[in-house]
Length: 304
Image (cartoon, rainbow, N blue to C red; front, side):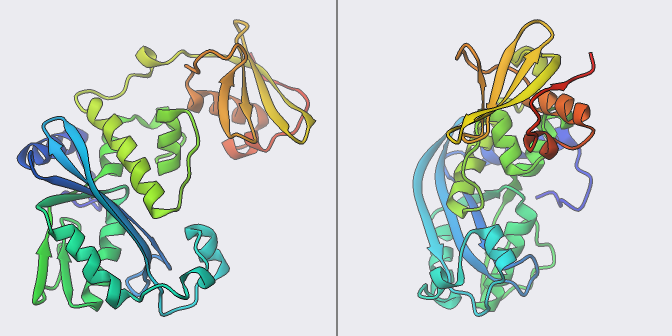
């Protein structure tokens, strides 16, 4: 696998993934994700989730899944709990790493498979360090300096995030976090920071990327552009909280703060570039996209 420490040529990486999937046709792809106590080699996996798919030419057919919670030998801080969504109380009666890790390896190795995850550098690193603590050497393309142990397993792998960067252009998304890319693709917010949810979201992103792998996504052919001239906050009751926007050609749309989704006033399908809308409104406020979503002003004029 290409090292994410290097600047990767987009076209070469796309070809690498295409070739890898072709080579493993008839075999399997495992998409996995971890929730952890932190980011270092001394931190622990507290949730592991994965789904395995049969690679059937250009289709990925679901085969099996695994989800395990693991009790770490450390107390997690409130900050860590906010990130991974798991509490010390919830994990207190879960099996320890030495019990769960062999089950994880059984799942990963019972069928010939390649591995993939969103930000593989992190997840593969955590998998490797958990393995070494339990007598396994889990070697992937991301771990060039792995120490072989008596139980050594080597996997071909690729990073969905790196593939994403090679296909979706920077000006089409607010950033490359999984939630931002899923919002760009699906036009709706989904659950995050749960390992199984992230596996399913990463799968959705991968399917989208594979459908566009021959060429970068062209916004002008798939979405309409809009020039925002005003937006305002509307909340007649606690059940309704919306940000209404108007375009220069009379277009009307709104963002539902409670549902966290974009809609057209006439209830037609939403076909506008959300990243471009966010950028225009953030510029009008003189702040960030986050500032736009926090806006409670009744009316804000946007420079024409």
